[in-house]
Image 1 (tube, rainbow, N blue to C red):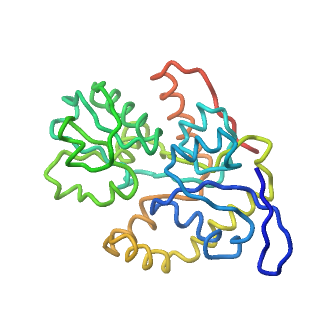
Image 2 (tube, rainbow, N blue to C red):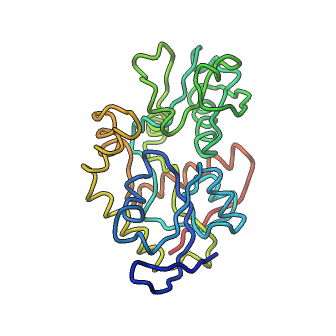
Length: 275
């Protein structure tokens, strides 16, 4: 899916359609495409992660920032060097509960990222022996807990909760995953159908991310104000808790997660990186 547009010089260019996510943790990845040199190389739109996956699967977008569970389920390829990952505490994937983790029977989940829902199932099963009923709910913790023992919050909704001062049991699922496996957790990657995963598009996305990482001070300041988060929270999150450049250990963590998710769902499908 390609469209023709005019760049500032007036010439016609062809730009791949890229579906991104408006969470705080994606801003460095897309900064070059929004504010920098890659602005006229990519046709950017926004949706929650699960919708990005659907748009890629339906051919509405060429490439999207897709939850890794959906990459695997849909048989998509991906660019292995970029994504959203954690190596320990991630802060933006929280499971908050009124009861101890092993007592959770009903879990209300923000279904924006199916990867996080599967991760919650894995953590609860492997670490706490719990297998709750899971249902979708809007990401408002008070409403979610009216009909559930626990709530799964992702992205900015999780960042708005103070784990130390919310009066609830709180599990950081990035930390829980690393405690369980000793590996990083990869939540989402740039993924698409194999025919559109071209070297020029990979180069544009990588350049956009590297431009964003070079502008972190500006991003932290502007996003703290725009989203109403404390500066210190945004700084720690974007510089310490979330990772954007992925390597072999991250891919090992991703494959371990997918293997466990397949076993949990009895799904033998596999995913293949674009190399």
